[in-house]
Length: 109
Length: 116
Image (tube, rainbow over all chains, first blue to last red; front, side, top):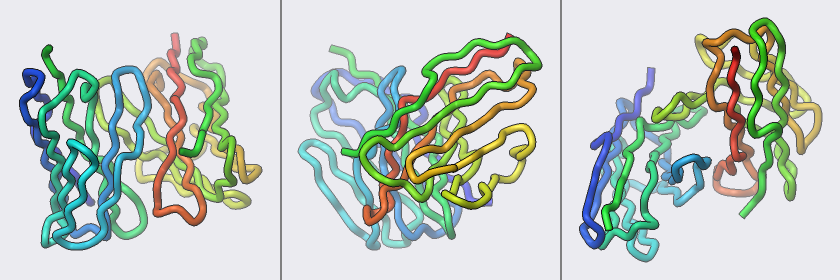
């Protein structure tokens, strides 16, 4: 079945450093979404990418969808302590979204 | 953004009892809601898709007789964990898809179930 993996599993960075998480699907996706889950909280929608090679920016966050629509990345520039949490990608296959394994980000002040 | 509520936020029950969890979309009508299970520090596992007015679609490996889903109205879906056992202890999260939106899922705050 469809699998969505994310790397790294964990990342500790110093405040101000950049951070990137990668999302890889075993199958081609129709679109991909990114969510952020704060510790003890629930996932919150960040963005959706649909087109091959699409790049979208939200302030310090840059999202990219691969040309083959099987991978995606989220890059955070100059991390802040408020960026702490787990970032999930969710890839849409035939009829449902499969959540990635998540990347847990810790930002050290 | 849209608001989805869940009740209760935490529940502790004895083994063998049934627990009902409610998921409500507060400011929009949701024809489709999703139920997920999340283990500590793990990803979200889709359990079932709940469609208003019809039977839920369960994912492979999820027992439909154990996890009863009812989507009785456009704003309410319920998940009942029947004859709960300690291995059912988990974080259960619902989400609702807003009609006309771009597939965005709005998540509820989750329910922490502990079965003793």
